[in-house]
Structures are given as structure tokens and as C-alpha cells.
Amino acid sequence: QLANISIFMLLSAYQFLQGVRLMTHAGFMYPVKTCSTKVDNIMRKTQNCQWLGLRMMYLSLAPISWVVGGSRSFFVVACLLFQFFRSIDKQPEGLGYEEFQASYI
Image 1 (cartoon, rainbow, N blue to C red):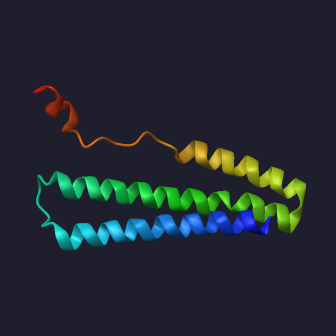
Image 2 (cartoon, one colour):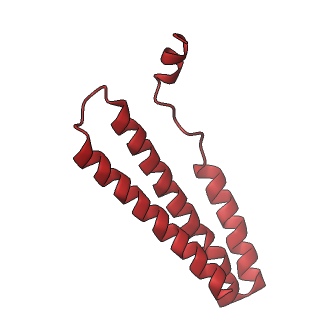
């Protein structure tokens, strides 16, 4: 159980670090322009890394609740996490230029 918790926490930390790495890369390697697609793509990857890091951190709550409170607290936390993820989950936003570029192909 502790290994499961530590794996989720390590995956969470890894995703957060990847997001920071990508943001640093975008800030120092590319000049920020209004029509820059490279920076937009990197920032979108950063946002995905942050969401994955949060999900892994939230998913570690279920095994933690099992260790601390037993099966009943695990059930309550699992139901709350299900409702929470259902309320915040959304389809990733497009950049808006994919359809425009696809019309030229």
C-alpha cells in the first residue's frame, strides 16, 4: 500500500517537474509573439503536465485513505474523487488553427 502511494506521488512530482521544464524552455528558447504556434504548443503541453500531476496527486488520496481510515473511508474518498473528476473534466481546447490549416491540405 505504501508503495502504491509513493508511486502516485512520484508520478505527480514528475509531471509537475516536466511542466516546469517545458515552461522554462518556452520562456527562454522562443520569443513570445502573438501568432507563435511553437510557444502555444509548449504551453498546452505544460497545461497537460500540470493536470496529470494534479490527477496523480488526487489519485494518491484513495490509497492514503485506505491506509489511514480503512475500507469505509476509502469508499467515501473514492465517491468524492469520482464526483470531483466528473465536475472538472473537460475536453482539451484546440488552438483554433488546425481547421484552418487542414483546409489547405
